[in-house]
Length: 567
Ligand SMILES: Nc1nc2c(c(=O)[nH]1)N[C@H]1C(S)=C(S)[C@@H](COP(=O)(O)OP(=O)(O)OC[C@H]3O[C@@H](n4cnc5c(=O)[nH]c(N)nc54)[C@H](O)[C@@H]3O)O[C@H]1N2
Ligand SMILES: Nc1nc2c(c(=O)[nH]1)N[C@H]1C(S)=C(S)[C@@H](COP(=O)(O)OP(=O)(O)OC[C@H]3O[C@@H](n4cnc5c(=O)[nH]c(N)nc54)[C@H](O)[C@@H]3O)O[C@H]1N2
Ligand SMILES: [Mo]
Image 1: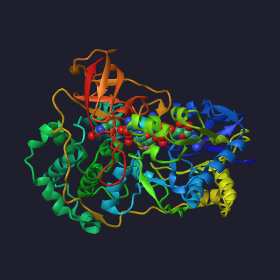
Image 2: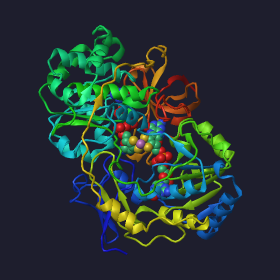
Image 3: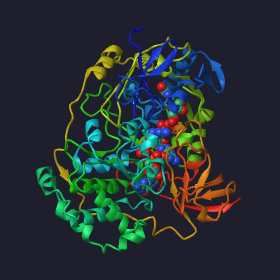
Image 4: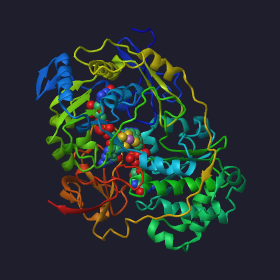
């Protein structure tokens, strides 16, 4: 065991904190700039998790060794292309990628796209080639922070803590925690952020805020983008976006001549044309010259491995899009660190598919998906394995040393990969210490945006044109005390008092994809005509589409209209 005693929070979160392990306890690190001497409630929940103690086959305990033999036999008997490798984001340490190398060499089918940020990432990459957040120092140097489709203080509480005294503007259909702390809150109609970006561009132009100098330095197509912004009468935006022009004037006043940070999140992109929407937001940012300065910039969930050489390179022959993967069409489904029964879209379809396949679950806890697993292999919990945690929110990494002996009957992802590489006569991975040291010691330098192309046309079907008066937009976003489907889950549906429902009403929600029962909660913070169901709610994804967006093979959780009936 190493004398080094830092551990990295493995949870899927912008913050990626570091703790010090001492006397059987985790204390927050004060040296890690993001953690800054505090840990959050989700980390505390993680430490209290009931981890899997034993492998299981058809709900009966067996030894780890027996479970690995069983899996080997099963893989030998199956046509590799009929084996699906499905990885979630239960742990974001880099060692989680080790099993990919085995499944690639074996010839399994992989997934493509994602359930998270991939749509927005595609939009940003189209405009600027790569996806790298500005340095954290730029955020600290900014004057005004525009929080755009992100629940900043809840989903990245540590990053928020570092800048909480700045001036905030929030763009969100919900009166979020950060909206309450903001100078201005634009309570926008869902899926109209591209329209808002165009409207802001118009006002910025009128206020001489277009930054021609920086546009010339690295961008092309600003004129086309401005033409797009001009193509509609100003007042027509009020009705569709649901925001008064006076608020836009106020916002433009507040950001003029200021160093602006734009913190974008998943909210703008959970739609079929989410990549276009995100690119429109980024184009507004480029128009007013937010990029490539030493203060401010635009942040999203970035490619945290940018600048590193991938130590787990793969080249799968076949991939299937993750939102509409049909588990039932595979003979074996291997699920690692994911809980698709709650987190993936169209729950009924997921369950039907899992029932028709041999399901192997490789994870740390017994989750909803384990109910449908034929074989469960316990993964070693994070305190018992070496790892490096990169962040998609900022450039600071966290190092995780093995601080406890691994529990018997568990196996870590690296050892799992090598075990099967060996069993199938493939070359082993590089030594784990070498991979660990590489990620620990490599520090890619910041890559600014080299060239930027403004979005020049937008083809987006509005949800407001499809929604009937008595129907609702679906908002599904994160909750404070849970991490996706893990920990403390709130299963209710929230609506505005104007909906006419009463607190505690039992209702059935339906969409063209499915239906489910909920208890209603009435809350002034919800925009009228919206229904909020948190990520991780057991029933939420019975309502969501199992179709991919137009660009990134990724899930479009909010591309639905909801009907509500008292049950
Ligand atoms: N506490 C907690 N923290 C987390 C997580 C968690 O589960 N719990 N999950 C982690 C993960 S996996 C991720 S990917 C990140 C995501 O973190 P965020 O990017 O903050 O994502 P969400 O919470 O899904 O939604 C962001 C906001 O978008 C708003 N929104 C919805 N629709 C629209 C729209 O059309 N336009 C605009 N402008 N806003 C809209 C929602 O009301 C919500 O406030 O958080 C990470 N951090
Ligand atoms: N309705 C709706 N659905 C959503 C979202 C939403 O906003 N709304 N958000 C989406 C987003 S952004 C994301 S990222 C996905 C997340 O979806 P998933 O990736 O499926 O994540 P979780 O549901 O948190 O399940 C993670 C599981 O990982 C396991 N695990 C934890 N640590 C380890 C480990 O060290 N090793 C292994 N092998 N397993 C481990 C735990 O058993 C846990 O149950 O959900 C998506 N689903
Ligand atoms: Mo995510």
